[in-house]
Amino acid sequence: MRLLALLFMVSPVLAGTPSRSNVVVMLCDDLGYGDLSCYGHPVIRTPNLDRLAGEGLRLTACYAAAPVWSPSRAGMLTGRTPYRSGIYDWIALGSPMHVQRSEVTVATLLKRAGYDTSFVGKWHCNGKFNEPDQPQPSDHGFDHWMATQNNAAPSHADPINFVRNGEPVGPLKGYSSELIVDEAIDWLETRKGGQPFCQFIWFHAPHEPIATAEEFVEQYADVRPRLRAEHYGNVTQIDHAVGRYVAALEKLGVADDTFILFTSDNGPETLNRYPGADRSYGSPGAFRGMKLHLYEGGIRVPGIIRWPGRIKAGQVSDEPVSGVDVLPTLCEIATADVPDDRAMDGASILPLFAGSSIKRSKPLYWQYDRAFSLPKVAIRDGDWKLLADDGLGRFELYNLKDDPAETQNRAADEPERLKRMAMVMNDIYNEVDVESPDWPGIVKRPSHKPRPVKKD
Image (cartoon, rainbow, N blue to C red; front, top):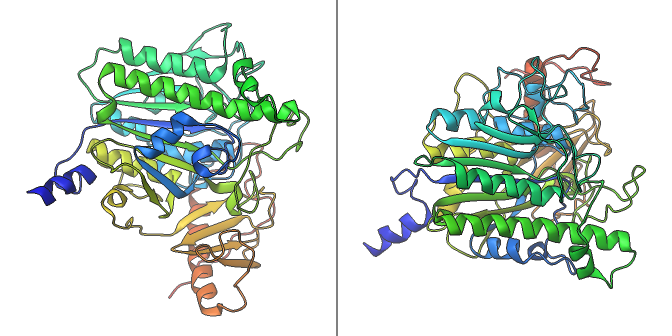
């Protein structure tokens, strides 16, 4: 009996008792792998996130679905590599690019399963935000939403561009991260209740233009230059907002039955990459590359999961987990059906909580034709990662277990492995290319012609 009880504590789903827990997904913008204290940053203080990790599971091989904003978000919502749905790059205001109505999001699936659903923060999944000719958050399954198209404007302090359920909110006082959490908590406190809830909280921070309350900048008074202190304080301000949200869950008595995932949409921004990026002091940790790269620093991000009673406290896992895994994972928690009429790229990570491996039907796959790195396509299969240029002709092969910083290209001394993985990459690439839509005025493939799929 004691063994059965322990199994139940680790995973009620695997023990045969489906959970109808609440689910919360917190997503930061441009937060690097090395930006949190619990991920080794020597200066930045993140006590609330450290506590969250200590009470749950810290992922050391957590990946964004893409190395850039909009595609990463689309992958999380749909469980599909973002190129399948035509999200090729960040979406400019007014762009025809958007997550189409034909895509089935995790919010839609959980709403069908009886969940109350809410979205707050940075949407960035369409160009024609709050316009009728493109779907909005409500069309993708969110009962209640308050969002911006991209950044909070004109600044992440005192923004004026939030929209709530289709109606402009008008000028707000305060900082974006805190305002987002205010809205999230207010929805929790005022919803009718009785049903489990699904809430997506997508922060703008620490993306530029960084705006940090002085009380958080002052915590780094000895840090120079001040612009670096503003970045450090901004991460601590996110941490403070997360702490407030978790405290609200505890006050409402639902914290112990709530699955929380905290992660980031891509790696950190490069300092001074563009005018105004002078506070971009984010860290990729020990990894190569940053945002917009397909090397690890561009796609490997923090990943913290807290699920009391289901995940033992203080665990650390190096099992690869991706943003595309969110949909199948939350569907299993909610006992909702995953669509079987389309290709899915993610897998439920619930086996991980019982000490088992994730059951994947295909390797993790990334594609970003406008990447700053020479590689534009990548797959990870077990410990091995293969990267290729936009012609799928020049390859780099790394064993991430032995060489997480991707310093030793093993392509020359692993010819058979290279051949096998290249064929798999080629097949996925072509499958995705056939499915991906064209947008008016947007070049889908700037330089690469699809290769024929090899047959056995």
